[in-house]
Length: 120
Image 1 (tube, rainbow, N blue to C red):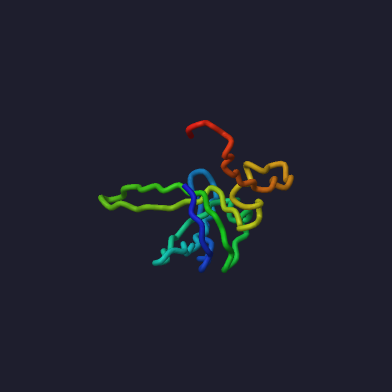
Image 2 (cartoon, one colour):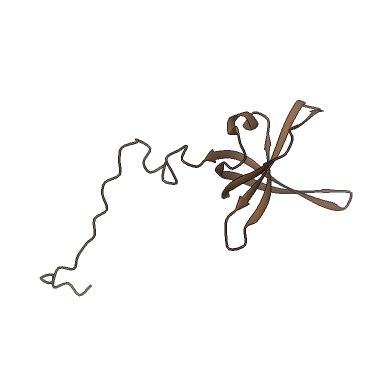
């Protein structure tokens, strides 16, 4: 799943020691534009913090996973980003279709030919 919006807040980085070694987590607040803008708290873990290099007011698209876990009969939900792209960094939304970097051909419009006798 992907969400796009503007980074409005960066929360402090949190570190800790787990059974698998040191871990790092940073959460950021993304405002999603709409008639009634929504705010979503998204977490980045480990090296993805450095890769994203987020700043306040960055326009980003975050690829996310949503997971809920139970602890003591209460449920906790986390929105975790596994990829964050800044707007304009990858050539826009059709980067996969224009991976070669060549300019896209101009859009052509088709006009109806009166001499064509097909019924459709």
